[in-house]
Length: 412
Image 1 (cartoon, rainbow, N blue to C red):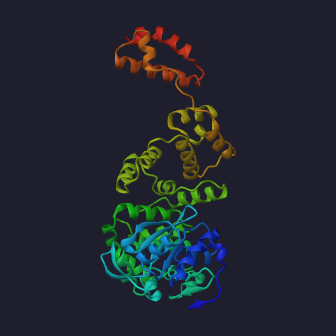
Image 2: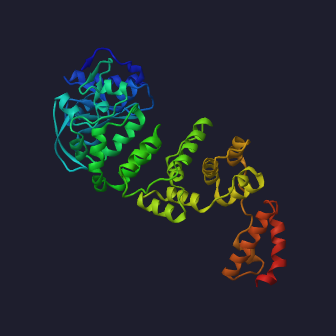
Image 3: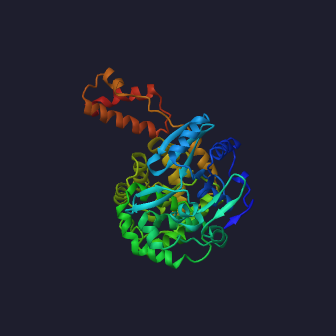
């Protein structure tokens, strides 16, 4: 389906320098079009998407013509036909038209083609197989525009075949359904996802994790994840989630108060794991070291909402756990318990603005007054730090040094 001058390209082309690349390709007898997410999201009225382009020129031809025109290229994935072209310090990914020769559920052997319909046929969903040129002409080979308008998310051709080409498409299907779906989920697609979900075990856990975290940030995440759990999608990683009510409260709280979104926070409240389960989750999903510490920390420490609303106890929490922990845990506790204190935003401001004090003593201070045993140095520092915290951080270095002399007998 061809739609003349259909799309307002100002929604896609924010930097007109991009048009230089269109001129270069056209000058050499080729065709260049935007494809996939950029076109789909612009049609849906969304913003903030990455630009992906497709061309009927081969990667080698594209690189050669860009070099002749003074455009820098980066070999992002030459083997799979993708070349990065640098325009005003932005890297545009341009992929040559392809057809799959062989697939194993994770990777595909491809052959370059000049047939736009054939390139479209290898894409996953109808809404992702819409192309647009720089003039706003739209090329829709599988009625993706109609599906987008109706909120229908479906695979191109046989759903099972599309999934078996890349099993990650199961999770992509659910993600796009949660974003664009308006009615019941496509029955043929769901059946194919359910029957092929074991193939996800062949995908690296990092790719599965990243896709699932994206799902958690989608608009209709509760409805979508319920469908996934009911159909045992990712059942080999995720247990049934009993806390959809908590997740719903978290989503409403974050939206109504215009707070930062966090997929990890949504994952946590969906399961409210204890420390053991949190560690298991972190290992199974191969979270980064920082994410793992954060996730387990939310499970290990459970201050009350009052601890956050009281400036003195909050000051202690900030010292012991840090701003990042306090920010996320306060939001989590409010959503978990269904309680939002009147000074909610003031607490968040306090978390960001209250000073985090530095304990004024170090081990060398004790050595200078005659404490030489490392174990005893540690014991005394712990005791003095406790006194300092209990004083609401008011004890000075001199006050603490004075405590050393009176405490030496009990420690030595």
